[in-house]
Image 1 (spheres, rainbow, N blue to C red):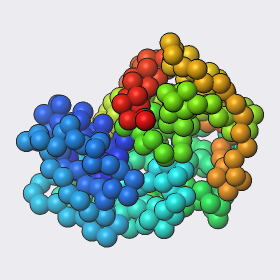
Image 2: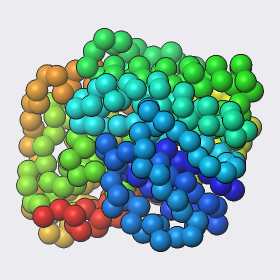
Image 3: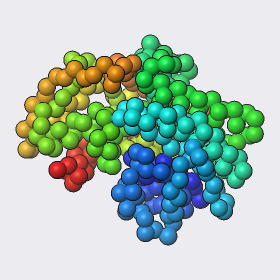
Image 4: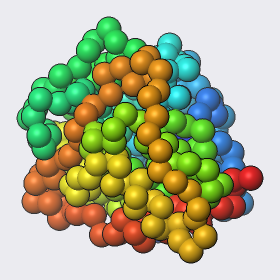
Amino acid sequence: MRILITGGAGFIGSHLCERLIGEGHDVVAMDNFITGSPANLAHVKGSSHFTFIKADISEWCEVEGPLDAVMNLASPASPVGYLDNPIATMRAGSHGTYNALEVARVKHARFLQASTSEVYGDPLEHPQTETYWGNVNCIGVRSVYDEAKRYAEAITMAYRRTYGVQTRIIRIFNTYGPRMALNDGRVVPNFVAQAVRNEPITVYGDGSATRAFCYVSDLVDGMLRLLWSDEVMPVNVGNPNEMTVLEFAQAVHAAGQPGCKSDIVFFQPKADRVADDPQRRKPDITRARTILGWEPKVALDEGLRRTIDYFRTIVH
């Protein structure tokens, strides 16, 4: 197969490139490096199965030759990324998704839209099922990401209904692993970098908010299963093992042993950085289990060990 991955230099995109090339597929990655990094693709750069196009998908998207699939991951995805780049984030979700869908339509390629659990907002339903319509503040600071992804889902479905494009939508829950950006503001790189530096692990608020963490290789497997399936409605992919942020900080501390001398401390961040931050997050993955035969396999302690090993190579 020949597959276009937009946002291919990002955390998840780079793992997708690696997996597909390893399976013998030809990959065309596109990125403008607004939050992605060339370093994420260094290990596949020399492959004869890999082509890279530096471009902003919000402005332009054109690929020569046939394509079997388009996987659209182009968007800042972390709080630092989308709060610092609000307009670019909304353009990625709107103009960028339109451009990627047009490529899929013209090339008669399958299309997978990388959506997010953030379409559920700060949920009133727990755990979150795909039929839940969400609780999103459409004018809050986080709306630039939440609403961009909700729009991206809507235009993806419109292309399926109007043009018959073989579309797929994956709703990605908290994912972690090597190649996460050190300064992206998410809880995993924050905690892991602090543990590696033996700095205090700073828990926002009282640590009672919950998350569920999926290792990146499990997520990639779910994405590819969905891409090649016949399922056209959104599918949650994430780890349903919910834990508090404080419990996660304790897990990071344990995984950093021997040697981690960090204490766990509590910190009250600026209000604009946590406005509308979901207090509970847990995916219902019934559809992923029944339709895709998928569920996460990598245990948290093993995933954290691999992640910490990576961060030790980049943290100074």
